[in-house]
Image 1 (cartoon, rainbow, N blue to C red):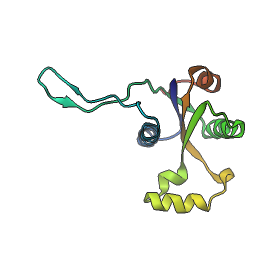
Image 2 (image 1 turned 180 degrees about the vertical axis):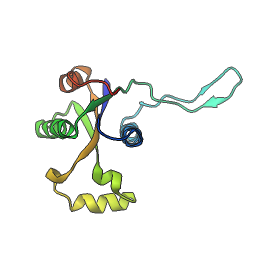
Image 3 (image 1 turned 90 degrees about the horizontal axis):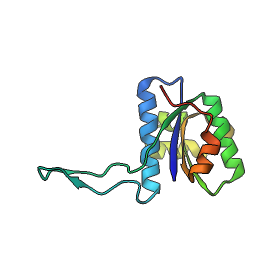
Length: 135
């Protein structure tokens, strides 16, 4: 299995970090086993589990992200899990606020700061193979 996060390359650093964190947390809560168990160091200190998969952060324009997202949704590809993080989500003051705003928003009006794609390596590579790593 493979995961990639694609973020808007024009975002300021803080929003890139926020978008990536939100997408990673969302993925971790939806896929069992992505977070490893706690481990002990040599001094018996416990360190909580971290992700046990690589999550490269890729860079694209907001328009490219929307196109990829819309194409994936149109294909209804059951091999891939796609999580979006929109400006609507980023600007919401609470989850209830997000839900209320989303219920009244047309999908075409959404602007994506980033998306996370998880699934079989070949299927993920097919969608993201030509997208550069965030630098």
